[in-house]
Image (tube, rainbow, N blue to C red; front, top):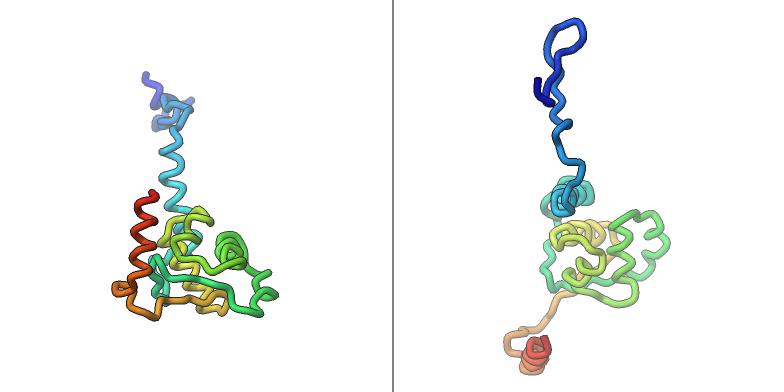
Length: 144
């Protein structure tokens, strides 16, 4: 008889035990790949979009006077809020600092904007015609 099934005492249906031949070691990629998607699902409440539309480059800052209410925030929502406390950060920068996918940050930050904890900032001018911006961008790319 194989290791996968064995007859129970007294006859009857065989007991299936597929774990007997399974290796006890799992690779890091197996555990993190599935774990990250479940973790992201839990952090966003199963949502894939937020009511607030945030681009990667949208800047986020905390709203003055929201510090007292911010004590109620937990887990990643608190990390998003805290990362924007010292200075305004882009959505992409917040994602890196908090260590979660950018799509999750867009949803969490959108929630924090709707709840009055964060304020989004967008560029008011046409960046395509801003020569100084284009020069800074070019220097930054060269530095990479």
